[in-house]
Length: 468
Image 1: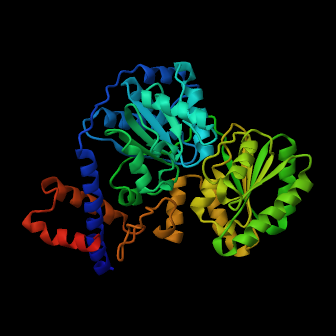
Image 2: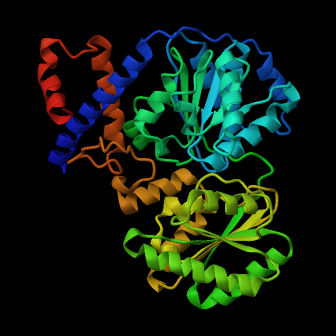
C-alpha cells in the first residue's frame, strides 16, 4: 500500500502541475476591463427578489464579484446540487457586466433549457426594466436576423441561447461575461468558441452534477470553485420510497389519485444501448397502458429515438400542463422545471447509478407542494442499496457513495477528453494525497512556472511523457 501511494503521489503531482499551469496561463492574459461594482442593477435585483438569498448564494456572489473586479480573468465553476438556485447567482454576475456597459451571454445545452432560462431571467429582470434576448432555434429566420443585429449593435445586453450563440453569424458588440450551463455537456472546443466571441470575457461555468471536492480539484483544478449546498426556502422536501415490483399496482393507483387532483408526474424508464429497442418498447407499452388506466388524464411519451422537434413538443406540453403524466426514458434528467410535477416514478431503479437517481429525483419538489420519488425494482437484491439512497438527500454525499460504487470512469461530468490517466492513484481513497499534491504543485509553479529550472528537469520530462 505504501508503494502504491508513493506512485500515486507522483501521478497526482503531475496532474496538478498540468491543471494549475493551465489556470495560471488562462489568468495571465490581461483582460480588457476590470468590472467596477456600481451597485446599480445588482442592488436593484436584490431589492426586487421575491425571496431571501441563501448563505451559499451570497458567498458565491461575493466570490464571483471579486473575480470580476480583479485584473485577472475569471475562470470559475459554480457547482450546486439540484435546485440550489444557480441561475440567480449567475444573473448577479451578468448584471455586473451590464452595469459596466458590457454584454453577458448565457449558453445552455438544449433549446428547452435555453427557453426556460430565458423565461426565468426575464421574470427576475422585469422589475429592472431589462429584457433578455433569446437566440432560440424556434425563431423564424427573420427573427433570428433581427436578434443577431441587436446583439451586434449592443442593444441586446443579456443574451440566452444554445450553441447558436457560437455560430459564425453571431457577432457580439462588447461581450464581457460568458456563462455556460451544464458545462460538461459542451465540448472544450464549443466552450472556447463562445469565449472567443469576446476580446477577453470572464467565464462562469455552471454544473448541477455535484462531485466531491477532492475530485473537483482534480478534474477541474484549472477553475476556481464555488459550491452551493442549501436549497432556497419554500421548496418542499421530496419523500423517497422504495417498492418491490409486486406493489406496482398500488404505486399506479397513487399516481392516478395525484393526477386526478391536478398534479403532474414523471414515469422514467432506463435505456441501455445493448437493449435499447426493448427498453424503448417497454416505455411505449407503459405509456399506452397508463393512457388507458389514467383517462381522462393525458399521458405523453418521450424517448431518445424520437425526432428532437417531436420530443420538445411533448416536453413543452408537459411544462405547460397539457400533458399530466410524462413517460420518459432518461432524456428528462436535466433541466426542465415544472413546479406542478410532484411525483417521480422510476422503473427498474436498480439499473441506475445513485447520482443519476438523484438527478431524476431533482425533477420534482420544485414547487411548494409535497413531492414523492418512488423507486420500483423487481430485484430483491437491489432493495438495500436503493433504501440507502432513499435516506440520503445531499447530492455531494450521494456523489461520494456513487464514486465508491462505480469508480471515477462512470462519473457524470467527468472530463470528456479522457485526460485522466491514473494507474495508481484512486481518487476516492486518496483525497488527502490530492490535497497535498495540489499544495506542492502550486509551490513549485510559484517559483518556476515553466518548470525550466535544472532541479525540475526530471519532472518536466515525466509530464511530457505522461501527457504528450
